[in-house]
Structure formats: C-alpha cells, structure tokens
Image: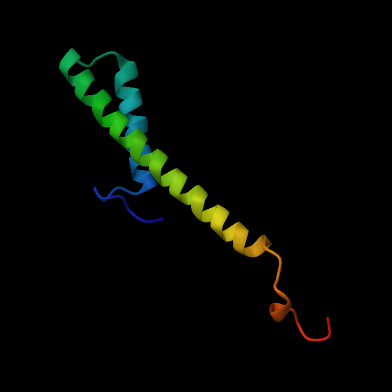
Length: 79
C-alpha cells in the first residue's frame, strides 16, 4: 500500500494510534498534553480511514475487472 504524505504506512499509523489510546486511557496526561495527543490521534485516525477507503476502492475495481462478463471477442475460439 502506498505511503501517505507524512511517510507513515497504515501499519505504523495504526500502531501509533494504539499507543496514543493507551496513553490517554492511563489518565496521566496533563490537559495540554491530552489535547495535543487527541489532535494527533484524530489525524492518524483520518489517515488510516483514507487508506482503508482507497484499498476498498482498489478491491472493488479489481473485482469488477475479474467479474465483468467477457466480450465475444475475448472468448476462446470454438465457443
């Protein structure tokens, strides 16, 4: 899968997002840190969502190419 503009792969973005969730659930962040962390989490969630949508669209295109009926010119001779 292609890398987003900030250079994070889906897997790295998701791993960072999971760490953010753990930090926020710990309750040890100051208000300012919690807000900054929340903002970064939203950015990562959007990035992951966009990458998933792009992958979903790619699958639909690939399935459409495979599942579309063959034109008569594409059929093997004798059919």
